[in-house]
Amino acid sequence: MNQLKFRKINIDTYKPGKSKLGNIKNLIKLSANESALGFSSKVKNIKNNKIKIDKYPDSKCKILRKQISITYKCNLDKIICGAGSDEIIQMLCQLFLTKNDEVVLPEYSFLMYRIYSKIVGAKVVFAKEENFKISVKNIISKITNKTKMVFIANPNNPTGTYLSIKEVKTLRKKLNKNILLVIDDAYFEYMKKKDYQSGLDIFKNAKNVFILRTFSKIYGLASLRVGWGYGPKNIINELYKIKPPFNVNKLAQVYATESLKDKNFVNRSVKHNQYWSRKFKNFFDKKNIISNETSANFFLLNFDFCKLSANYVLKKLEKKGIILRSMESYKMKNKLRVTIGSSKENNKFIKNLDHIFK
Image (cartoon, rainbow, N blue to C red; front, side, top):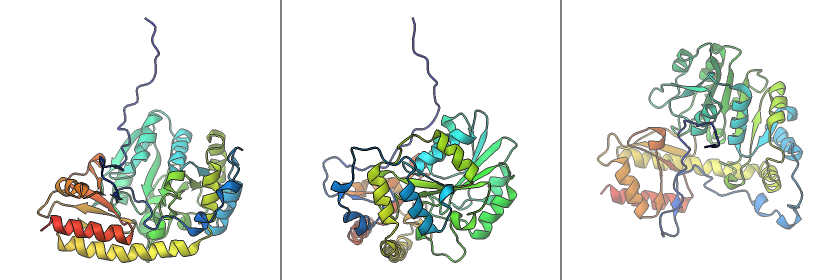
């Protein structure tokens, strides 16, 4: 009997956090690290009826790339746009990896790094973290002559910790020159520590570093799926050969371009995040919930030393219509991740969590 034959892919499929809870209305979703303040008023003021969606979008995102280069003072020709930074991760894996190649990742990291690596047949090697922080020493110890890429997010998701400028430079220096270091800057806008710089600021002219950026977080364009990558021109040229045509839709290109022009919105988002970061941290400390000094727009919550379990708290909050992210898919037991939401959402979250602990 003739049957279709296809490759079996041995991966754990990405499972997004919950976005619905039965018939409960007016949900508070603090599970996906989305923007607390929505999106820029410049986006709200765009007249959509003037955007011709009956025509294909610009395949090379020229206007968006030009605005990116202006905003971040970087080379237009070293930018490529994708349907979210996820797509650029996928293309990098297609370009660099073949069967039996190795990719080194921190123990806890964005799940799509490992998923796309495995899809192309590469072996994923994990480097243990130290107190939920990426360890440069442990990454270097996992390098072999088969290693082709190292992925890190800085600040890191889901742990909320970060590597200093010195640590990031040390990592690049100790890696073999023929290994591509990919730095995901998804949360860099929220970071205001003096010993931190974004990957783009550190490695703007590097020959073996590739930077990922997204519009899904601070810019609040998560549902439009738009991100970008920055790297050496020879890599960018090859990525354009495998990039799908018209991969970033016209609405996404226009909205992202206008978002970049609104510095006031970004500044307000950062101030909001800093204010609520302090309030959240003080509250968690009082309940003996161990959490990081946040460097992004979320907290990793460790319930190992408090009187209630993560799962108990998760279920109790869900009954009140508040969604947090379980960390079980990251193989982190008794941990939750909470996103900093709007002031109204945050107050309701704190009030309900306080009640659960009484």
